[in-house]
Length: 357
Image (cartoon, rainbow, N blue to C red; front, side):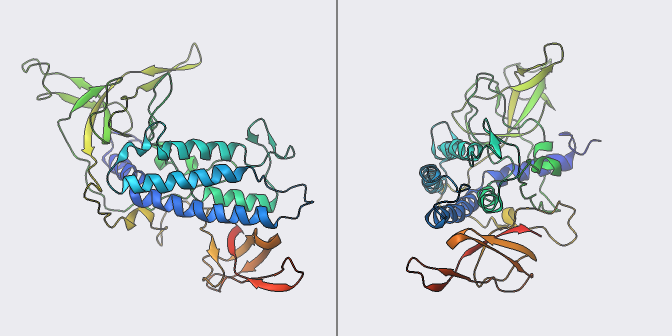
């Protein structure tokens, strides 16, 4: 059986766990904290970058960066009380995602590296260090719970490979960390529903499975009792009040993708945080374990002066004119000697980003 087949029990368990992870308060808080590190580094770079450098970053991005941080703060405050409307259109996390996509697309518009909204060559080292810092706040398929807002209304997550295939974590000029999935996972709940159709309003927040239905000839066809369900695609996290999405079909003749209506059966209703308590969710943010076959992440979290170096390699800071140093794993991250505005040499504590292992 294909390891990404949604009828395979292990695949189902993994996708179910990953969707719970992607919709957890702890993961979105980690996104906020990582983006805050990037925001501070970008603002420091704008303030200290040489004025005559033709490869300087764009100061105009600071408005979008501060708006994204504000959205994360507001969204996390609501999610901590169990309010999941934050993923709906025009709400905090949806707005943050839209602004992040715009920032990513227009991050550095130097024609040597960028054209028509697309990067075609590696950015200069100082710019790339900032770019990698920004993507340290991104997780694979972190837009999975966002409200679908397109004419075709096609589900955000159609293939389990989007979550499970290591190759899907590589995005051209950056790569996202592959999650550490526990070896032992609980089974996927088996529930009678409710069952809704594409286009209907979703009655509650949670993880839903697209299904085809075979009705019993004996029982009332309006009842879910006695129905047989067959999987019709990848699980999705749907937010209450949104419109149940379609799946899609590929039209080989027209070379087009068309929406395909389906039924959705509730597997798990999300009632986390309604009591205002954030449980221990540390399993969602663990790094790769010894002997893990998960791909090695190219995104290592930034670290500050004095902290132990998490990995041997070349580390770069954008602060106070920028500098690249080689640090061995376990050694303390160095400070930076730089000239201040009065021309005096001073020692600064800075944030370092890994640029080469």
